[in-house]
Amino acid sequence: MKWSTESSFTSNSDGVKISYASLVSDAAKTKPTISFFTGYKETYQKYLPLMNKLHTEEGFNIFTMDHRNQGLSGDTPGTTYEKGFEDSSGKRICYVEDFETAYVEDMKQFLETIVKPSCQDGNPSICVLTHSMGGLLAARLAQLTGKSLFDRMALSAPMISHKNILDIGGLFDLELPIGLASSFGALMVKMKQGPIKADGRDTDASKPTTELLTHSSEKLEAWHKLRKEYPQIVLGGASFQWAKAALEIEDNIMEDIEKIEVPTLVFMAENDAFVYNSAIVDFVGKLGKEKAMLIGPIANAYHELLQEKNDITSPILKTIGAFAALGSQEDEDFFPDSLLSEINSIPLSQTKFDENIYWPKGFHSCWKPPSIPTPLVLKNNPGTRYFVSTFLKGVALAAILRSTAVWKNTEK
Image (cartoon, rainbow, N blue to C red; front, side):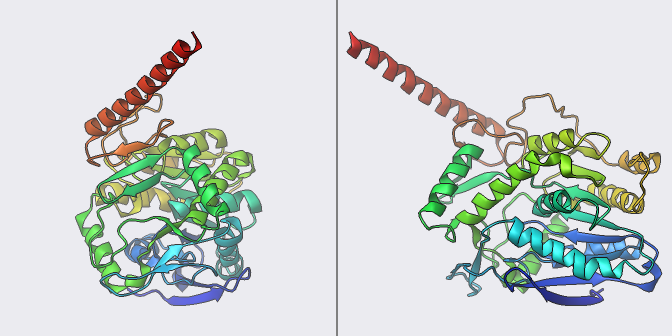
């Protein structure tokens, strides 16, 4: 099935073309609308089967868009490109000066001028559904606009705090502590290197991605096929300015957490290679039980919860449908029993939040790294990563003790 509408609008802030699509039918006029926002490095085309399912089986009208610098949307002025890949297309280096004046403003304009006007004739409410970076942007928009643009939001593996991973010569990855990544990014921007590529993996559309996205080989193969068919959707990486701006908005969201007024449902994967689960737990905890509910860690799930195996994704979709169908109710009970019955069908991990787990099985740690860069050698071998990290800490400690001893001897 094709989208019933595929079009674009022009960003009011800087004239960038933003592509969007919708699935709308007269039969769904009395149902709430779902507005879906993808994650970083994605396109709404990737989610057509999922959106089609919510439209045809659950009866929702669907609106979605591609963020600037990715998918079918245009690029922020100042974006740089890299050449030389087998598909011969120029690769975009994701670049924004500031998340709020770019991504968040695009989302706001989309909801105000495209989505909300369609809901005036019978549609009672709007539920924002997001994945990863889309959740970060929706959370900030909710803080800035209150309940004026949408009534509730469901966040899949939201990018409340993203992992700063460097690819070292293709040999291994290095996970940078937040403070180090922030300082380094700020330094590069100050040195006028903001638009330059900070890091990037899987930028060649002709090769299958090796990132741990999903356990579903079928959905992963569909993504590979889409990358080959539309090589322009494959990014060349993120810029230093993008990385700096991402860390800044993540801080702002936690500082203004009380400004979120809409009911919020949050899904968290057990083995997430891209965002920190500890930050998600902190986000939901500070929102409080009266505003938010955390579902997770979801057992045996990677980052892309909406693209996982059917035994994971299907109950999540049912829960999202039940949540969106609650509409714009003003009741005190934002999470009624009808919703809880759907939630109970989602397979949960036995991992406890109070366990100090740095190296669960999977790609990267789910909890924020220690104070030094951590090499992630043999990405799927937690034991090796733990050994290397411990060894480096030992070397650092020995160096400190040795320098102290030398200093004391010199003093005598």
